[in-house]
Length: 509
Image 1 (cartoon, helix red, strand yellow):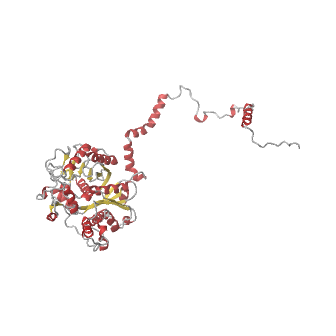
Image 2: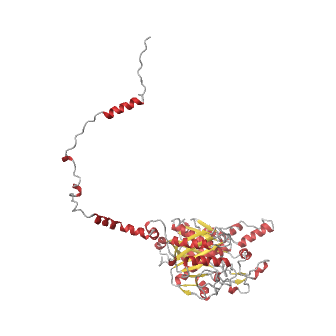
């Protein structure tokens, strides 16, 4: 049978395809006629007639003209990135920029010198101290100190209901009262702004109420019983009791940032409140700290040999920076700031007490109780960087100095490394005692009030500066008249936690 040839449907071999492509490439292409010159658009008609080389501007003149156009941009670059950021910082809130300006529109404080500025001012001007001897401390075997600086005369307002006060220890009661006074001062007490989510809280203490903790522990551990332990006992001594009680009392629905970092609790509260507003997260923040004087805290510093034992001379201790200092004296109190976005404060006609220009916090990362001067110096420089200020822009430094041996030396050397001996420095601990978790906000409040009146308090008890301390302009002996507009206030805590805040009068900022 004959075989019928089959038509192939296969794809041609790649060599065949390549040969076909080569033939097409070699094939002559038809010429396309050029367009007539009359149909072509003149190249330079739109830009004017072609000038001869001699008629053109010299190259140097053209380069100079271009340089003049670029000069504003070059000048801005020469001014440095800091100037650009400073400009953005100052106009940001008005133009929808990166950050907001933060001001203080209300304050409320309770401390060992009084519960309002007039009383505290009188004590500072006259050199009076809040320190006294407490004979009851002798009941604790082994305790060497008998000294403290309590708040005298604080009572719960009669208008407060038991429903709101049953979860409060003494520290949270002082915190809420200070917040109430601050809101009243700011014109926001009872305002919908407080409870509509626009307002937040950044508030701290070393711990909760030590009295509540001791009572709970005595029944639980000593008596081995739950009988008599109420449902609210824990609420009174939990670490965020102050922030939580403020939130519940005023029905605050914004963020709540509890700070529990010993002696930097209040200053971190102010700093975190400042940052929450600066970055547009809240419009208003209730910020600060509180502390209840408890035998537990007194005993801790006594065990560390950091408490003063001048039991027969309560009027002569503590003595920050002095060669004869022998330790700190524990105190108590509370202070709350109403921090507010500046444009919002101006729009409602609020009185501005001061502006927060900068804040920084860091950690030494080296020792739990021995401070490190390098970490202290670093936090001051970080705060200056945040505020875009030079050390020469600061007119006063409020020192943390508690009257301990190594703490005062480290802090004074760090301060001298940043500012030299040209900026006045003083500590308020000689008047107030050490309010631990409340000291940062109490001292910031007093610093603002002193700036507004044009004077600063001396370091009470400082007679002979310890030669191991840094070379500083120590304010001592009597109050000093000082017309400055920018101040730094510093605090340092166990664990190597450091804080620095820069404050300014509203006209200066």
